[in-house]
Length: 78
Image (tube, rainbow, N blue to C red; front, side, top):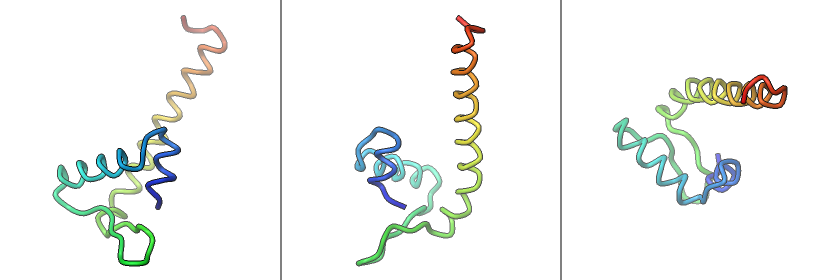
C-alpha cells in the first residue's frame, strides 16, 4: 500500500504510479484508493473488489514471462 514501493518494483516514479492509478479511476469512474490525514494509503471498497482479479492477471503475466525466459534459456526459441 505504498506508491514508493510500487514504483520501485515497477521501475517507475511514485508520481507515474499515482498518475496511472488516477487514469484507471477515471476509466472506472470510482475511487480505488484513499488516504486519510496521518494514515497510510488504503484501498476503497471498489479497490478491494478489483484486487483479486488484478492479482490473478498479474500472476498470469509473470508466469508467461517466466515460461518464455525458461524456453529461451533452454534454446527452445530463437
